[in-house]
Image 1: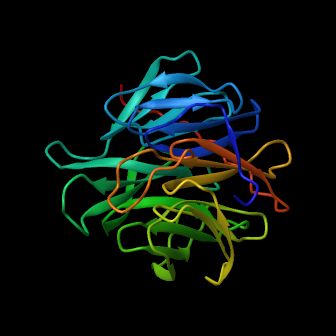
Image 2 (image 1 turned 180 degrees about the horizontal axis):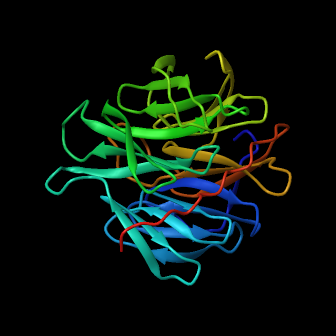
Length: 286
C-alpha cells in the first residue's frame, strides 16, 4: 500500500480537509456527512459538531475556527462561542459548501457543490480581510481541492466532476487573480496539497491513489492508498514530512469497499510540505 499506515481506529463517512495546526501541534480534519471536526492522529476526538454537513474547518493563530457549514461560514472563537456568520449559498439552492483553504495572506477560499443534477452553476468564494465576499468563479460543478505555489503566485483549484485541475496567477498581497487555465485533466481529482518544491499531491476519488503532479502538469508518481474513495491529503508534523490522507466509506456504484474505506492514513515522505497559513479573523455579522 505504498507505506500507508492506518491510524486512529475510527471510520469516517466522508473524511476530508486535513490541516496541520503548527501552533498547537495537531492535525484536524472533518467528517463532512457526520458534521464533525476531528483532531489528533492516534487518539482522535471530536472537537465540534454542526448539522447537517461541515465541509471544511481552518484555524486562526489564536485558536479560533472558521467553519464551512452547509450554506454559511461560521466563526467559532477559542472559547467555543459563535462570533459571526457569513451566508454564501442562497436559500432554496440545492448546493452545499465543500472544500476550503486559506490563501497565503490568510483569506479563506471555499467552493460549493450541487446536491442535484445541475452542472456548471457552482461558485468559488473568497472571504476578504474586510469581511466582504468576492466570487472568484461561478461556473463550477463540484468545487474541490485548493492550493498555492510556494511563492503564492499561482493558485490551483479542482473541479471534480469534469476532472479538471485549474491554475491561475494569484497575488496574495492585493488579492488579484488571473484567468483560469487547465493544468491537467485527472479522473475524479479531489483534495490536494502542494509540497515545498511546488508539486501537487492530488487525492483521486474512486482511484484509491495520491497522484503527484509537477507544476507543469506532468505525472511524477502514483501512491496507492488501498482506500478506493481517497479524498484529500496534507503534510503534517514538525517537519511537514508526514502525509495524512483522509478517505470515505460510502456506497458508490462500481467502487468496492475495503477495510481501508473511511480510515485515516499516514505515510512518511522524502518531501516537505508547505505550512498551512492560519485564517486571519475578520469582523462578521452575528
